[in-house]
Amino acid sequence: MRDCGGCEWLGLPYRKQLKRKHAAMIELYEPLIGRFGWNVHVDDALGMGPSREAGPVTAADSPLASPRAFRHKASTPFAPGPHGEVRCGFFARGTHTIVPCPACPVEAPGARELLNEVARLASDFGIPAYDEDRRQGQLRYAVLRCGWRTNESMLTLVTRTREVPHLDALAQAIAREHPGIVTIAQNVNPRVTNAILGGETRLLHGKPRMRDQLLDCTFEISPVSFYQVNPQQTEVLYQSAIEGMQLREGDTVLDTYCGSGTIGLAAAASARANGAHVRLIGVERNVEGVRDAQRNAQVNGLEDMSDFIARDATEYMREAAEQGLNVDVLIMDPPRAGSAPAFVEAATTLRPRRIVYISCNPVTHVRDLEQFGEAGYRVDRLTPVDLFPHTTHTEMIATLTPATS
Ligand SMILES: C[S@@+](CC[C@H](N)C(=O)[O-])C[C@H]1O[C@@H](n2cnc3c(N)ncnc32)[C@H](O)[C@@H]1O
Image 1: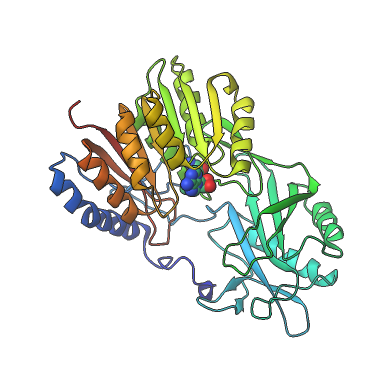
Image 2: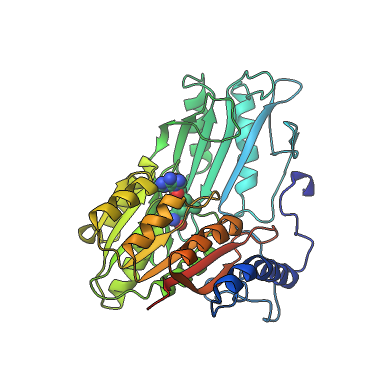
């Protein structure tokens, strides 16, 4: 199982993992804190507790169980076997050699087994797996999303071309065996690339989106929209981010890099539950994500107070700064590359009362926070959240306010 190349810290006690992550974040953020003289320290890492109800744990808690079955997204590449059969598992690091994986302890129960069954059925239907070296064959990847608070799941079969003989029959066979799979989609990726998904998606079975729930909101997610992989810890992340927003009646909240709208909508719903009504604007460049966000606003009864816009976030911010848009609270959650200097410049021109900056890459986080520091913002809170137990990755939340406030 360890041949898969994932979960490099699986053998390390969870307490030690959390301590290491905390120590690594202190080392990374201390020069930044020192440079601006901010009165802030890096909080203890919020680790994964035994359940949602029990809440997060830190290294100080006892006992600390090692998290299991927390990844609600599982994927596999496919490759042809010596007899033309479809093989699946993980690519051995740096190669196109498939390492089989009968079961995975960190994925949702049954997820890996289902992906293995897809490979077996594809072999039975004679659908050829894609050969990365020869660039021939059809079936490239399968991506499975499993609901956390629902029993729904969604399977995406990624193929090299649109026309694939027997693909519909494969989808129907999977659906018959697994009624919980409410969506089976085909995604077409003809490119020579390491990216899993291509630009075209079509429905093979069921409904276009699956449903899940986070922080008492319901979210519909389509096959190509972003949705966090560890829902229990996503709630911890969002809850901590919402606390940092300190929303007030009448606030305008701008949720940038908003994916399917999950953070902003959860924040608006939480404010509403506390009697405060906010206006929400979400910006995301993935059109499918924006469509999901608009539906999610409706599903949660927030459509009258929210707008979602399909745009590049930096372009949107530049225009918003030129037009003097009123923004009270800014949420940022960019991909690993971080934000852009022009985004940060526009954000500081808009001068929101609070900025909550979530990052899956602390290195680019520090880089962007430095620019905020130079433009007159200070960091008031720095919280690591362990979204990815057993790996070296740490998610960070920074809360910023204008230094003169
Ligand atoms: C880390 S995800 C965060 C999504 C969402 N906040 C959540 O919690 O599910 C980053 C998102 O930024 C989007 N994105 C990446 N670059 C962007 C850009 N230049 N402008 C707007 N959105 C972008 C991606 O499509 C993705 O949905």
